[in-house]
Image (cartoon, rainbow, N blue to C red):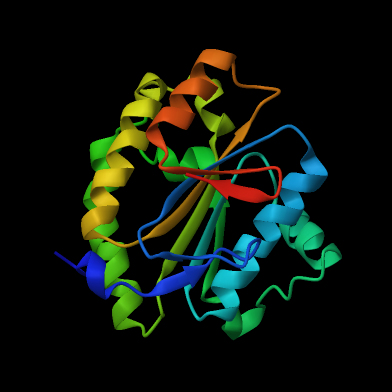
Length: 194
């Protein structure tokens, strides 16, 4: 085990005063883009200011666009040499690096990524991804909920803080209900619900 649950650092998600142990896996189902940007910007800012390695997997957004809305919300996005703790990549490329979605391939890289971040003296690892990439017909995307359920198991050993973003205007009700079932917590209307 990388870090026993009892020894885990408590982290602030940025959008609530509560703290949670590393390894927290949370769902954010939203229908308002302004609210999403506000919540996600606070989540990212909290990780950056805590000295964590922060990754954002964005769907169809350029690096400049995401940085601009973060800056518009008052978030200091690291630049130049200081940008190392903030990684912004395309969601489809991140989740489907070989042109298809395979949860086991992703999980195989989690441990090494976490170990590398710790060796680089980051306080922890925080990730958030826009999950609408799964609606693009990518081979293997039908395994999305299998992946989400396994994240809970993987985070018992590899304490990555993660928040999965689901657009309620794009995902059907059945998929959203499955997402709720496999995430231990969700952010809804200004609070975290277990």
